[in-house]
Amino acid sequence: MSKTAIIISASSDIGDAMARRWKKTGWNVVGTYRTKSDKVNELAGEGIKLIPCDLSNKESIVKACSQFPKWDVLVLCPGTQDPVGKFAENNFDEWEESIKVNLTSQLRIVHALLPNRNKDACVMFFAGGGTNNAPQNYSAYTLSKIALIKMTELLDAEVPDTRFAIVGPGWVKTKIHESTLKAGKKAGSNLSKTKEKLSSNECTPMNDVLDCCEWIAASPRKVVGGRNFSVAFDKWGDEELVNKLKEDSDIYKLRRFGNDLLIKEEK
Image 1 (cartoon, rainbow, N blue to C red):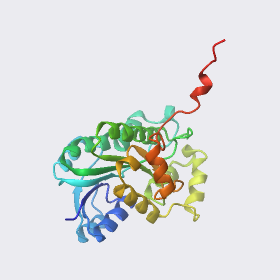
Image 2 (image 1 turned 120 degrees about the horizontal axis):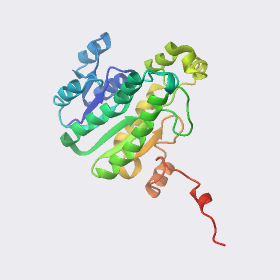
Image 3 (image 1 turned 180 degrees about the vertical axis):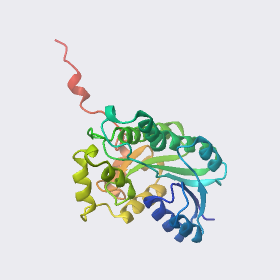
Image 4 (image 1 turned 90 degrees about the horizontal axis):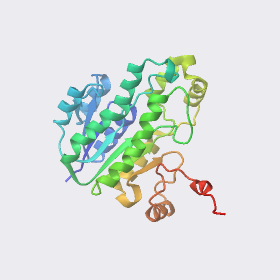
């Protein structure tokens, strides 16, 4: 019996590629889209069931979730970098809307769909940059992604019969970077960096992203549960790393290190 994957934002670049690959390998794939497009029609033509879902609209989310079948893998890959610019200068309503799309609406979907999961189900989110530094002018996007990283760990701790993981795809040539290009000077130094990356051969290949996701979907909870994997920098799939992950539950999670420096010796 074929497994079922639900891909939220299957009409996006990564979601589209994942839906097509998994359908070709025999999966039952159900995805969502926000607006009708040629890509949506193509996916439907390949036998992928598509359901409209606007992550900025609660009613749309509730309606979409009521139509999903029982599932084995749930992938949430929507995302927006808007509004780009300094927090104090952004329109707060737009900033709050970004938090909704990048974080709370995705969690609303997970909350609604968890009761309908199959045994040993897997949930995958997508992370972004900013975990180890403070990227300027992308506060809503960065905050949402870091919150998702921590929520992945929290869900892993609370729902032990399901695998939760989050994937950092790196620089992939997708439409998410259009926000930076449109923002111009508001993007700061990231504008030139984005242009340079997109015009080079240094971006993460889409196939690497898909391979990493497939590895996570096939791996046991002790290896992937609650963890944040970087497609570009981590040796996912490597047997040595797998053994280290099994031994240390803190690897690839949000942690503060160096606390021993705060401990003063008693005199």
